[in-house]
Length: 189
Ligand SMILES: CC(C)(COP(=O)(O)OP(=O)(O)OC[C@H]1O[C@@H](n2cnc3c(N)ncnc32)[C@H](O)[C@@H]1OP(=O)(O)O)[C@@H](O)C(=O)NCCC(=O)NCCS
Image (tube, rainbow, N blue to C red):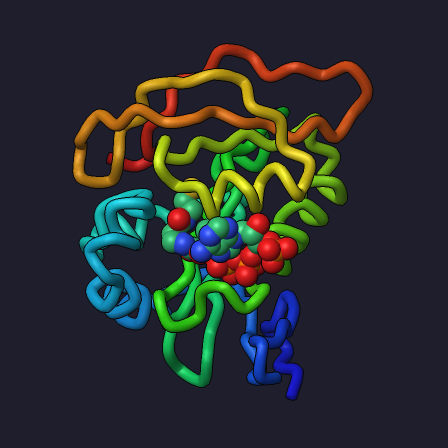
């Protein structure tokens, strides 16, 4: 059932409802649990920032003042997905998306991408930027399907400070736009 705070409700392959809501203080602990429960493999592909409470609170502040647009995906009270557009007020916000292992491969990634793309269009952004690790074929294929274009490789700073070589991609939302050169690192360190 739709809740007042839902940005959207999407469904898993077997019809289970997933509620997409803005990240707020209520979800700090469930978001930490989401990260802790990820397999090593998934975490090696998705560690956008440190999950220390102090850091999450800074993202919540950025979410409240419109600097970022950050959502959690909920199955009952559990966070099973994390999706965002960092730097939402800039022409090209940076997209991130991660789904808990048990919920991958059921079409949720496509639906979450649609929500973020719709938000960027409504917000009047010129386009969306993202990076993805070189061996993440599932994510790369998902982004290509959603219209993202490969821009080249770049060094990205991961949530644990590691420098990781990643593919850079962007989705143009306006005619003839190309993103400026961009340093990829978490906005809160
Ligand atoms: C990458 C991720 C967001 C994709 O979401 P998902 O819900 O698993 O993917 P979907 O079921 O919506 O599938 C979308 C497309 O992705 C591709 N894809 C998904 N799983 C795949 C796999 N195991 N192998 C190859 N391609 C795959 C397919 O092209 C698929 O399209 P199709 O259904 O028409 O074949 C999700 O798997 C995830 O969070 N993975 C771990 C963290 C991560 O990699 N985050 C992205 C960091 S850049």
